[in-house]
Image 1: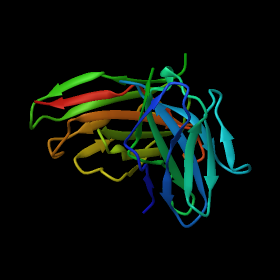
Image 2: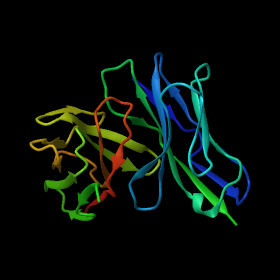
Image 3: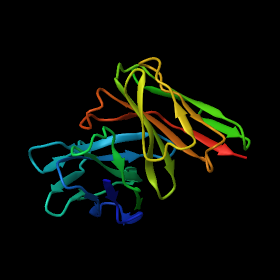
Length: 115
Length: 114
């Protein structure tokens, strides 16, 4: 069964510092990869996705993630964070090798941006 | 505005009672999903449906039931057989159930068992 591992449950960082949220997945075939963000007491919103093509994908608010097939990773990065980036971030995978047509999510990483 | 509406937002239940969480979408999406969110465990898939009158079990379907009689609606019933039902429940939908499609989420329903 596919699985997604987010190695850090919480990441505290100062405003304007860079951040990396790590995500690894288990799969032996092609995958689609996603990052979603959740603000308190809300549903999740798509941040960015990798389906095919360039392994580096970017969001409109400065986040980027790089698909690394050899390391089965899809880490999320931002060069300079803002207070408003404080939220929980979820990595998710859709494994094309299974008949399952639903995303598998990681356990989440809570990003805490401090002034 | 198009979106997903979940109700109620908060629900309290006594042990032994069944409760039904509502999920309605006006996005004309074919696929709908129910996830359960617990602190430190992320989202776990309960059930999903790719088309009307069809649905599949997810990873933690025991103690839950669903129906998909209309394209717009995918209600989730938490039965008394669910051992630990206190959680945040999220409904989502996508255009198709292809795995490549982006999920649109509702705002969630928080169920507390007293």
